[in-house]
Length: 245
Length: 317
Image (cartoon, rainbow over all chains, first blue to last red; front, side, top):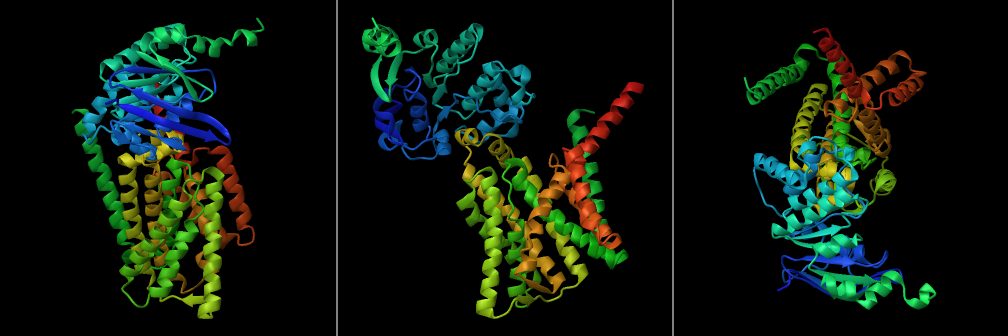
């Protein structure tokens, strides 16, 4: 049984199909990549899975249970956590409290406050933020704010983690660190779906990739298959007619 | 002595000081009857309205202008059922009526953000005030109602009791996971929701809890005025004052709004008696100065002075 499955998932904005009749299957334990040009519907699909938006038609099932139409906090407590394309941290709260919130309200269940502090520092250590635990989150660099979002998402105890462009805006060293972080999360047994424009990263981290274009799925396969697909190259580089050749 | 025992020792001392203050306040009618009791009742009224406003609006940033509506519901409860049942039950019913009203209003409107929420809550106040007025004129055939007098000492003791319960509730919320949730809602509501917080439920419940205390305070204060009508009970100043007093005192700490509203109320009494013609003008000037020069309120000023003081102390050693 796939951990997450979508059937005919559709979302319109006005008359525009942002996501149109998309089917997908994500297997337990894999890193699943989601790519496509700007406006292809990648983030919209994330918003549909995490229930930030409601689907117009189609169903999404998580571990065999239909989760379409549930509220975002319910989705989170069932074990699906996410990060945001534009960072959404709690700027005036200390880094530590950002993560503690996830432990309080996520899927991790009840624990003592000492246990919470210990777990929160573990997650911060895991993403490499143990030195800045008491700093207000707004004072972190962009790369560190993105790490904080990952730590907060992990603190909710997810089985499935949605990462929305965690590498955008990072320098080469930070991208390498982020790739290593994604691999370590997967080693914990957490399934990952990631949206990314950094091709090198997505090709080396993911086992399977789905390509969206104008809200439709145009290709799906291993990184090698995707890299060799004529359709995908056409979408990214334009075909000969458009290029004027 | 390690840090933990030091902390518990500090807690015991703070607790002892608070207990002494509470006993002094509770026995006030015995050694200072008359005006001090009446003045402290007014101060407690504003403190309750302000702290009640602060527990919801300060962390979430949802500016509610409904305090007067909840306060007025309490007042009318007292006017309607006041003579029929024991006073404690009246106060409880007044609070509960406001609590229920806040639950309904909250569920309907707490998806509105920023200025829209503020405007709606103010509209609610106007709506209830007009509806009550309409009902009284068309169905009961009167404009206002008389409320049974209960005596200043009793009013004072009830207000003190409500204040103590409110502080316990405020501290409990602040230090529970819901305190953290409220702050996260104020800073990035969408992220809070995706981190597992049932934002609608948390907002509505805390909004209703804050309304409970406002309503309870209203049903006590009604007995002081003996006559009420919709204009008195739903006086819009009771919506604006808590906001101003909270800003004046500073919202960073819970004692900020208490200090703010206490000084504010005393100032108002003082100015009304000394300068009845220009008191609003002086009041306005003080408020403008406070907003311009005390961005974090009185508490911010106190902390700044304290920091400067402790720096100097360290510099000498």
